[in-house]
Image (cartoon, rainbow, N blue to C red; front, side, top):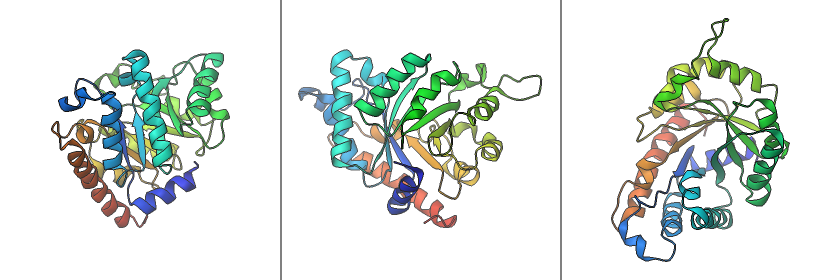
Length: 276
C-alpha cells in the first residue's frame, strides 16, 4: 500500500482511525475463556465490529509474544483474518524492533514477507543500519519512534544538544536521509501535541502514527489542527478505550460504538479541512 491508496481509504471511510489490538487475555470478557482460542475470538469480534470505522489495525506484539507459541498463533490467525476479510485495512505490527543490520533484515523479512504487514514500528536508537533493511521493501513502511506519549519519554527524547536541539528532532532530521514519505512514517504521541508545529515543519509530507488518544487523554482536535497535511497525514490510534469499553457479552457492540464515535469526530474534522 502507498500513501495515495491509504488516503483514498481515508476519504472513502471518512476516518483516520487505527484500532490497537492490545488484546490482554487478562482483560478480555470472561465468557470468552471457555472457547478454544479466546484471544483470537475476541480479536475477530472486535475487528468485525470496528472495520467499518477504521482504516488501520495495530496488534501490539507484547500481548501475543508474552503467551509463547499460543500467543504467536493468535497473532498469525488475527493477521490472516484481517488480510482475508478486510484487505483495505492498513496493517501495522507494533513490534518496536531495531537491531544491527543482519538481525533487522530477518525482522523485516518476518513482518513484510512472511506476514505481509504494511508497516512495522522500529526504534532508531542503533542508527541507520538498524532501520535500512526495513526500507528495502516496496510499498511497505517503517514507522520510526520519534516522540512517544509515555511519561518517561522525557528521560531521553528531550535531551538537548549543544545546538539546543532535542534528541527527537535530531532523530527526525537524520532519518530524512534514510527514507522518504513513501516508506517512512513517525510515531508522535498525542500527549505531545505542542511539538507538532515544529515536527510538521520538518516532515510536512509524512504520515504520523499518533497513539495516546482515548485512555491516555490526547486531544483529537488539537492533533488535527497541528498535524493534518494535504493527504490527511495522520493515523490516530485508540486501543483500550475501544477494545475494552465493555466486558460483557455486548463487548463488540460497545467497541463498534466507541469506534463510530471517534470516526464521526474525524469525519467532521476532515470535512472542515476540505480533505473529503
